[in-house]
Length: 105
Length: 126
Image (cartoon, rainbow over all chains, first blue to last red; front, side, top):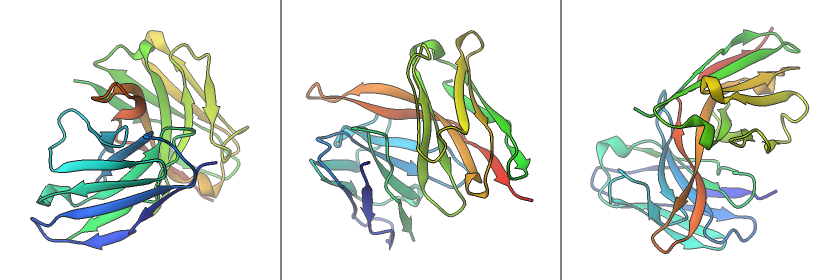
């Protein structure tokens, strides 16, 4: 099974900051990597698919990069509504999620 | 509006059973693969099971294989998860999610869960 490792598990940031979240796959997954945002009590939201493609309706301050085993989610100009937990997910094999990164104020 | 609404969660004793439902609206349910994903308290997301549009392909996570059964009724726009032999570690918020094949700008096609419900809570406890 593919293991997905996110880092850091949590981070503190301020409005306007640029933050980056890393995700590493235990084997090569090409660009089969998605990113989701999840807030308590809400449905998770797809942000990025195929490693770097922005889902329709998602603000352009979100961006994704990487291929193979190493991937990054970047948020440029953090907004109050961006404080949430972010998950990567591989869609190469069995849709395994990373452990999550909580972005806190 | 495109929407998924889960129901059927509750408190059940270890070894008991529960059936979750997911009602879909606003899209052609019968053409999409559907999934169940769960989140245990204080933990991350875990993929549980998937079923293809015609029910011809079904997959389970090892943690639920042999105990859970996914099914769908396309005439009713509904997805189900029959959960038997429940354990304390099955306690979680259960989400249903639509799987779509999305095309990137360079033509790269990849699966992603583009629509999610808000979840239904399952608690397994004495």
